[in-house]
Image (cartoon, rainbow, N blue to C red; front, side, top):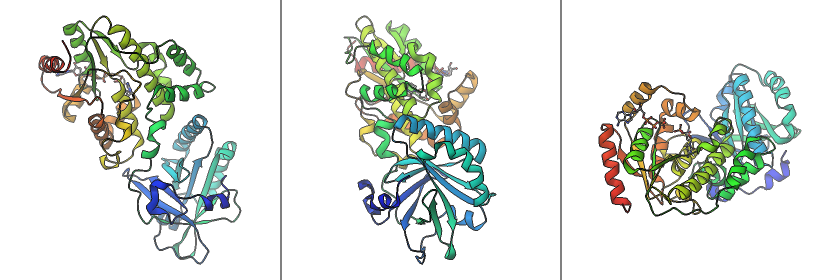
Length: 421
Ligand SMILES: Nc1ncnc2c1ncn2[C@@H]1O[C@H](COP(=O)(O)OP(=O)(O)OP(=O)(O)O)[C@@H](O)[C@H]1O
Ligand SMILES: Nc1ccn([C@H]2C[C@H](O)[C@@H](COP(=O)(O)O)O2)c(=O)n1
């Protein structure tokens, strides 16, 4: 637990300079996906709340209860896994907890809103669930005081309490943007490898991935033939196009994640962002060594590569709409310097109506993110937009709606223009 004194002394994160006056800030992912900011400041009991906190005040006034919990474990892999385990438990027990980021500590967790349970009854339910993890958690109850003031009361800190108000101003950037690099998007293989090494005690399959990676050359170069990557949302026609390109160019067809690690994909897909993205990121580097080997002999076509890894990672981490995404030219859009670059990245684009038609006519198993793409319009829009923001190399958009033969023809023209063949 962070002591009251330490908390009071923590300076507000530099990137949130406009909020210097507050002691800490809770960024809550509200229902519409745009973060809602609540400030918590030390205040005497006669302090007046001028900006009553949305969500909390109406809920408490109607007799419900609210609790926040943030994970303060210093090691990132156990912290991420504990958060995921708590989320699963809370999802089952408590209804949907709202993701929460506490600033400036950057500790993540959840806000639990219970309209039908009193604070005391809720505490009796939460205690046994949280007890085994309390040393790694900061849990706060929210209490309604006189004059409609809402107080944050941390468990285990005696009578300490903090006045909760609606924050004066929202930060200029989405609160998750500063931690994208290194937590969701990896700028070099060493970062992704580091995460998977930390996973070995908890996920034995991480050792398998790392052993394969150990055998790969670390900065492979491509040969003198075209290397073409095909990207796009699911069912835009990547498999169809890559198969045809394979035949037309007499190319080798590769896929990211590569076949050698795909037996572990489901395991990593069920892990939190940090671990899941490290798996896909290192998978790209393993594919890079395959590209290097194959491109000494024949052209290479790759079904998904780094752009997919980065686009899906950012879209998942940044809640809300397009306006919350990192600005254009942000470092998370830059191709990693140590990753083999293709000659051309084709992005297949398709209207949502036609994509759904193709999905339905195909009807195969989907990953959680693919299912999310169908149901969650902002998520899909973000993935599409993110593909377009990637740089160095950029994606070249190709309309995937014409008949198969026409799409292939267009892409072959592009290849002629971009590659020396
Ligand atoms: N140009 C096209 N016109 C009409 N149908 C197409 C076209 N290209 C592909 N399809 C059909 O659309 C469906 C999805 O195509 P495909 O499997 O190639 O997409 P994908 O991008 O590889 O999907 P995923 O990423 O989910 O594997 C398939 O049934 C395929 O036959
Ligand atoms: N290089 C890659 C490849 C895939 N992913 C993720 C993104 C989606 O969740 C899913 C789509 O893959 P598909 O079903 O088309 O095989 O896998 C990634 O992050 N990086």
